[in-house]
Amino acid sequence: MNTEFSLEDQIIDLEWCSKNGHQPPKGRKYRIKIDRESYVVEKECLTGRELLELAGKNPYTRFQLNQKLKVKDKVNIIKINYDETVCFSTPGIEKFMTLPLDQTEGESQQRDFTLLEEDEEFLNGLCLNWEAIIENNIKWVFIHEYPVPKGYNHLKVTIAIRMLAGYPQSQLDMVYINPPLARIDAQPVSALSLMTLKELQFQQWSRHRTGQNGWRPGLDNLSTHVSLVPYWLEREFKIRPLHEVA
Picture 1 (cartoon, one colour):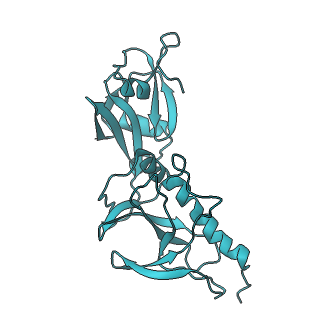
Picture 2: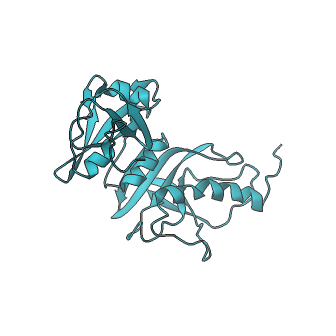
Picture 3: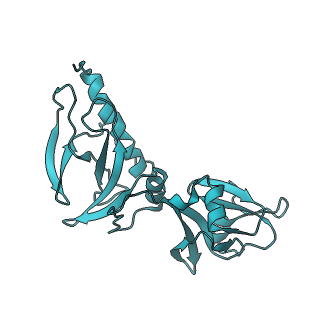
């Protein structure tokens, strides 16, 4: 990505302008960022619907569009309606973020604390309902409807990650799963224990990094930790292959 806008090719990088306090000029091409992807548009203004469709969010009605706007060093997250027009020459526009709206009635998206921007981008990119919850003064991230490899008694679960003090310099550890998992062949799974979160029974999977592959401050984050979860679940069947079930 260019580190500044180019007057030669007339492409204005909105993220660079926002972070460096420049007002984007009018009548140019604009490089905009939606979630993690960059797009070049030749119009100065687009509607919320057009931005969602540009990002491939179809049907657009299943998604909410948010705009990250920086004004006088204060960052605001603003909801953009489908028929609302956004003009890229507006000062402070840094990026746009999409949020899936496919949770069912009664589901909530509890946000008790603010996550790092890169963590929110990762979670939104999963297109799964997630929550940031404080329970007994401990911060947790819940990811709902998380897919589970075949061989367990559930195909989808809620996984919980404990956001330990000092993160992201200090490591994240283990994963907590609701409802508890069991192998369909009834073989035992080692290093499991039960605990209660939000009046639900979660299963603690005591899985840890090794000394040779420890936490890498500046590189590891919520996304790299969550990526270990399918590895841990699949590794169970590599250690003890799944027996045929009659």
